[in-house]
Image (cartoon, rainbow, N blue to C red):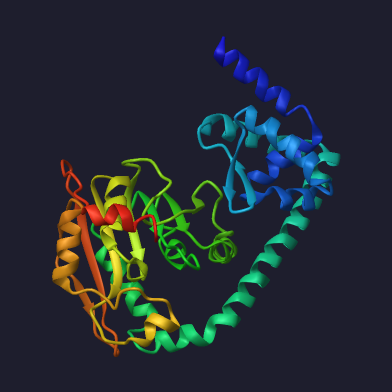
Length: 334
């Protein structure tokens, strides 16, 4: 009876031209409700009502990001979603009127993508000077990325969590090797930059999530690989950050941390808001062991005034995470 009711709800939800168009658009990419309204040429309250019906039927799901609400295809009904998209593709091929609507929607969607990219370029232009000064102090990004890829080449990435995704570069770099990627950042503006960079990837492969690295809004044991690329130096206390990374990793899952070795460039505190001036190998090893990891030998890239380190470790299957009492207080202030 429950299955019959679900199928009945699905067909009712699809029994409206606007909701058919929304379902077709969501097969392409995740969209804000306001962006859907822009594409459809309808008011946002009206589109929100249609969105509610699709969500109630299990065909879509909402995700809040600050004051914005994003909509994506439901991940809990994979075979049903695939069947719906196949049916919509057949309908578009067979019905000229529906095809014309979908074609028009895709053209408007292309304009939204272009606007996202323009906003990202504006952001980069505004901050390019500061970033270039920081890059000049350490090894070239391409070399860091190459060595990181080598460090993670010994096993499949599986489900990858990119903590502090920033511009989305790491998610883009590993997209062809990971089964699925969650790109997380606390900063809304950075998430919008990342969305512009990653929007060419299949909607089912990439998910952008707003969240704090010391309090991840993600379930236990749900990832095979966790990546923190130039992120941990922003943490007043790294212990709860690594404890959270361990929590969301499956037993045997891997973590990779790219950050600076200990240094004395105090100007990074004020110019780039770095809370910590890098890490020693001993500090990092102790932090990772405390979080329940078995630690590998680090990789050092010494091509500049700042030494970049790549630390990798494996989550012990039966490890219990021990977080100092002070970390519980600090995590609320990160």
